[in-house]
Each structure stands twice: as structure tokens, then as C-alpha cells.
Length: 142
Ligand code: FES
Image (cartoon, rainbow, N blue to C red):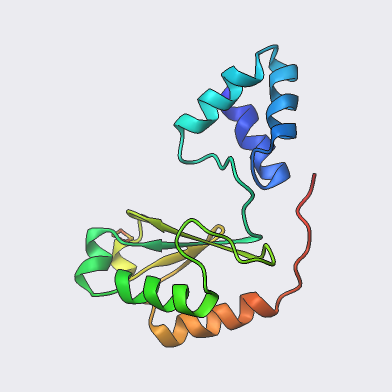
């Protein structure tokens, strides 16, 4: 029940803010410490504000073998001026490095929120970043 509530809260708020943690704790009659402790155990849950667009770059073996991960990460780091785990100052894009996106046949792969992009090249990433940075920064629900 707690994991489902945390998942729903994260969907609603975009991350598990102190307010979201408090609401989940109140709803399930748990302490905020119990809820935060459980949330911090799972990498699925975000305890820091996230960008509207969450870019996950795969550095798993299949993506690595086609030479994709490191050049893609370097390209994005230079272009957005953020490191993995950081969010752009405008709150639009968060960069993450992950181990496998379960799309090894599309290596090198990246994911933006729930959308998967395969056989990425610097040119494709550049076009994608241009598109994402030009989209309006709409606030998430909450
Ligand atoms: S190793 Fe990159 S998608 Fe599986």
C-alpha cells in the first residue's frame, strides 16, 4: 500500500516533496520518517525536485558496446551545462545515467520521461534537446 501511495504521489507532484511525504504518512497512519525511509530505499522514487523532462541515458553493456553511452552523456553535459543527477536552472531537464532501459536492441538508447529513443546519435540528441528546451515549461500538477 505504501509503495502504491508513493508512486501516485510522485506522479502527482513530480517528486516526493516533504509535503507529499507528509500527506502519504497522514493518509496511511505512518510517521513521515517511515515513509521517507521507505522512499529513499527505492531508486524509483525521487526525493529532490526533478525537471519537467527527465532524460535517462543508458550506460548498460549493449549501449556501451556500440560506443553510445559516454559520448551521449558528454554531449548532453556540455550542451545543458549540468552533470548527471542535476537539473537545469530553469527546472526543465534532469539528466540521469541508468544501467539498462530494457531496449538493448535499440542501443544506444535514451528515455525522456516515458518515451524511448533508440539508435541515438549526437545529431539526434541535439535535435531532441533543441525540441525539449523550446517547449514551454508547464508546471506539474500538485
Ligand atoms: S544496455 Fe542500454 S538499453 Fe539495455
